[in-house]
Length: 170
Image (cartoon, rainbow, N blue to C red; front, side, top):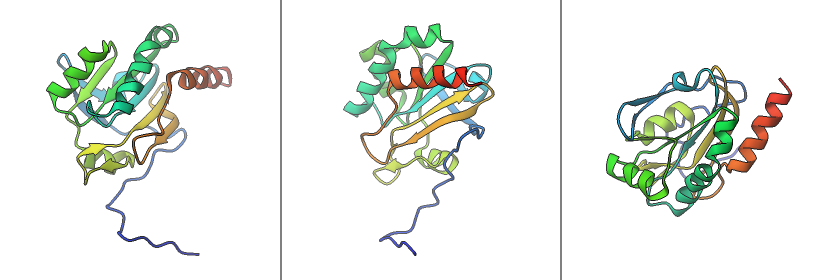
């Protein structure tokens, strides 16, 4: 059986599979400095959320959900990091509007993220579609969730349950 489409794939990268090491991603951090993944979370569990941008109501809801559960993530020693292609001013607005206390990175090149992680991009490469990862220590993937549109993303409660379950099975 063969499958054909109207347009060829645009060089989409390979999607991250179970227990594969997260590739190096660098971003500017709101408030200054850099985020370097997976190095910055190599010694702990982490949730990495790529969001479409400050303009996306679904992304704002997801980030608010993780912020509301942040005390539980901290108690479980789990880092939460959100990243987007937003310019600095938009990322800063996201942090301020929702009182985000976890790290937020900005200015990513969506086409580079598409190539390195296999994330879907929107509007011809203007933004990264919602993509989420749960990483165990040493930057190994426990879960990768790729959305091709606005919905279909990680939820804080589910992630906390998954991490508890994965830790029990270690």
